[in-house]
Image (cartoon, rainbow over all chains, first blue to last red; front, top):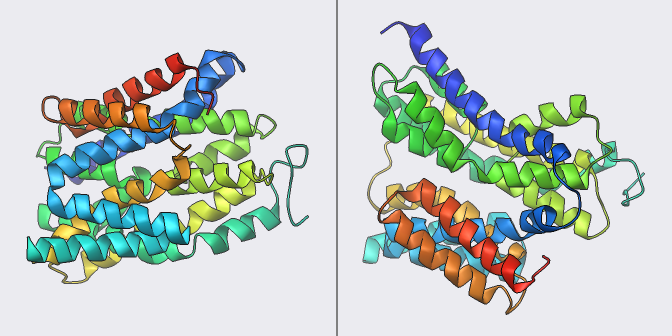
Length: 99
Length: 235
């Protein structure tokens, strides 16, 4: 398998990733600035994150559930994401060792 | 020029510095997660350059994890691109929101910044704006340490003979989810978040069991958003 095929595949995936990052910024100019669309944009992130977390917990099982609970609690208390990540990582590792 | 307001300049050096300093811990947290990705790429038989390129141009733990599972020779490019787009579709929402936040930011400046847009830097920037400190410099500043951590971590993980196993490996695999979970309190809007979030979670779990995790986020999150919108929520 020539290397260029692998690099081309990676660049293709990178293009898809950037299309998502830039697409909303570029396309929203064609959308209305008031009304339903901007309201949906404001409402969407929390709901997307919750669905992602729920599906991830389903896949990861108890360590993921306990890790998520620790991360959320640490973030709510400290407001520091690094503390939330550390708490989540530690809780998930301990849960994985014990359960 | 210590801060900007909604009427101020959309990009300041002070904002960059503030964002960079606020996100410095991500060099470590993203570095650890990136190192795990580097180890995984090495295990896959990918070369060092290809592994670092992956983390540079895709730059997404979730999308890279998904495409990692699809990797084969020859690479199924179309399937991987679709999976990446589905996994990262939330960025459409995020960057559209950035356009609303920074309508006066030139595209030639914003489009390169979006190369390293991350969940956390987006949320940090939105939170700053809600405090009256709207600044795309903050977005770039907070994104840079995250990119350094992720890309540098991938390189280090590939080069270092790390072989995480047991509970540490499980916890390391959990890190992308931990990123998202830790952002949830910033999105909490009190008890009115309960119903749409419960719906998003239930639908997400149901979809994950049938269509997979990428679609779970899109469909579950979409249904939860519709519940909020139909009920008349505004934010």
